[in-house]
Length: 429
Image (cartoon, rainbow, N blue to C red; front, side, top):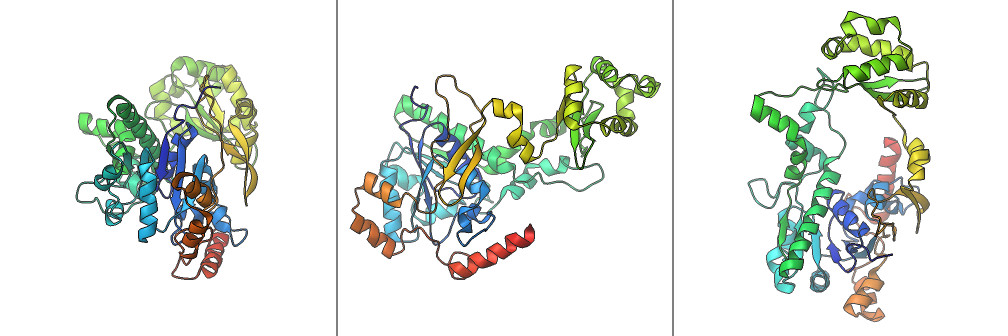
């Protein structure tokens, strides 16, 4: 097998939460060596989204484990001079530095691009603050829901006459995808010129870029798109329909009169399909509510998988709405080998979503599960910085590195904080 596309590229990953780690995860999938930096004083808060089955619940976050595969993990107290010095030494041997703090964080640490390029003139720095590194909102903190709000997506998301609807942090992976593409572009330029550069990626702008339709509709037509729920602007029928069973659904889309004829034949040509109110696309759209009720009378008598097969055989777009247990056991997804079974310390053996792109010459696989806290301290510090076991132990004694969290939440000691967080998650379930 040929070398992976980014083999030989080293990333110093100071990212937290989801957007930044998503970018470095994709680059790690492609073969880059990613060294994730955390702190025992302040964990990556994505670790707090676990099931908390035990005091080490910070290792049980499904989102953290999913988005930090193919990475090494070390801990550094970045508020201590020795921690910052180690970070700088890693920058010297790195190709990319990635972070998604608000701009003031790296500046306060003395680790802005201006300072890092003195250490390593060829370094590429990916900065992913919520609002970018310039402008009046540059130092504001933000999370996925805030990014969605400012992008305008919720104003067109949700049901008619209902409130704007948040999609659930989708802005984070969207920005992460943009970050990975930006780094690949910067690497290509460095390959040609030998020079690094700073990437200023505003998560707000990254996600707003996906809103081209509503933005252009407003600028071209002075029209504010309404919230439609499951409705399409012109297709009918279009939506999710109840099927046999508890909370079982199938989606069906008919995009033309020709498809409508095929749909009618597929469900047995009931008399109502020949009514004038359903005779053409506009009529069907104007009578969408009644049409949905009639279609659902048919779908509710059948299994969602059966409905999909009937529709697909007739050439009509349809798919069952799967829960995650069904996704994991879906024969089509299984046949493509998308999920990979990985064993991770503490959490055990589980299927993980694989890389969604299949490269014929350089197949992408999960090479390493997400690191446990500080798992690779000794390996990285010894291999790349030449530290002795005695020096590494001294750093641990001074709490510059470590493998257990300190008083990092609620202003409490670790054990009490973990207990409180476990209670919160138990109640939420």
